[in-house]
Figure 1 (cartoon, rainbow, N blue to C red):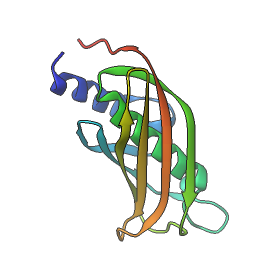
Figure 2: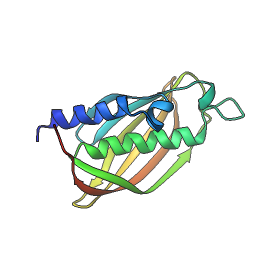
Figure 3: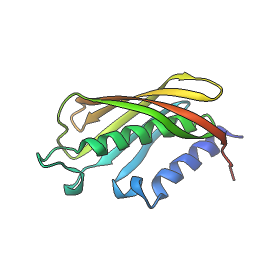
Figure 4: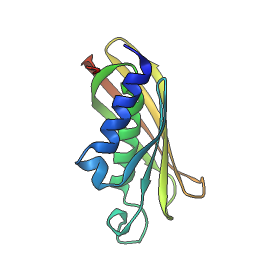
Length: 139
């Protein structure tokens, strides 16, 4: 299975998914071995009552970026545990999530994700544990 085909399949999924990812203006920026960089464009639907990025959006972006990074292994997966720490209020026009592996095993993987605002200030950090289901079908 060629890595570039797997990477393109992951990017296509993110860019063409009609659900949560698209609704929340998330886009793939970069993908490599056990690494993903994504952004979420902020708008009025992304904000909480204080006018800053909603924590749920930040959590969803982190989980999506870590899931993308984990899928570069060629496996389908599900999240089995995740945690986020909010460090600063996130303001601006977008958020950028950078996910990378901490450990990849045979059946599970652990990833870390840092989220930055559009001024490159670290606003949150998350970890996620993923369970591998089966090999991705590439076609």
